[in-house]
View (cartoon, rainbow, N blue to C red):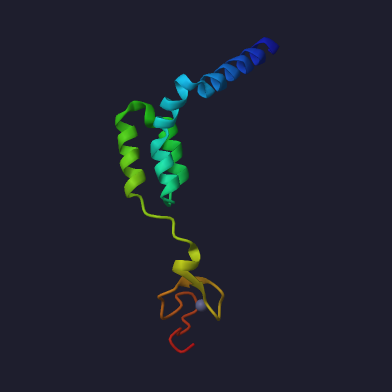
Length: 110
Ligand SMILES: [Zn+2]
């Protein structure tokens, strides 16, 4: 058992060393370009894009699909910009709403 654990630790150290090695750093960075684009453009589903990039990017075609997805994915809009709290029931509703769909409060009056 301990040899198995030490073998895993040795392989892990080798992997980290290989990633940090300059020979592999550029390919690893290039591989993660879709995730970087999604992160920099503040896309809504950065985590899902990253996971798909990590798991399926190696197939090549999936990498291109994820790259396009990262570019066209909707931006992550803060909740405060699209939702507000109803004065009466305190539920979240659209900022453009004229009637609360929870308590039917007419928001045009207030
Ligand atoms: Zn309400």
